[in-house]
Amino acid sequence: MPTYSTLSVRHDGDTTIVEVLSRRIYLKVVEEFREELNDILFNTNGAVLVDLGKVSVMNSAGLGVIIAAQDYLQKRQRLFLVANLQPLMQEIFNRMQLGTLITATASVNDGLQKLQESAPAIA
Image 1 (tube, rainbow, N blue to C red):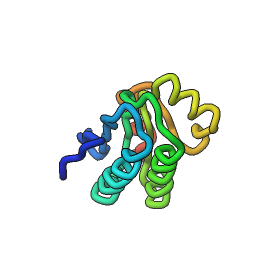
Image 2: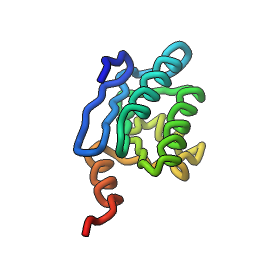
Image 3: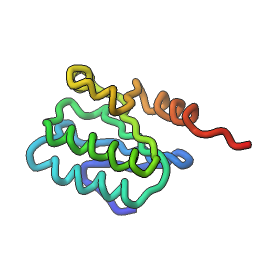
Image 4: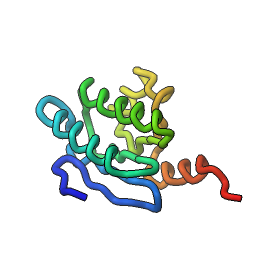
């Protein structure tokens, strides 16, 4: 997997965990964020969990990248979650009712647990 400037990637089983390294996702950073996240989405299988713990602010274009990622994965029957929303980001998610589109968990571990619970049982 290539090296990214705004993201860090690791795997937990079939889940790709993407940590956003930038504190602010706006202006010039948004396009790089979009390109890097899309590269990950296009080149992995399974669920994707985006850790937003370091992100203190994100403009509407950044939120659009998150929504587009959810849409892309949903159309391919893959799961998408975000985790570790900082207070301002949590407020934005609440006000925009993004929780109706995107599952948000308090931590990466909570997200991994939720994904385990969502996985179909193997007989």
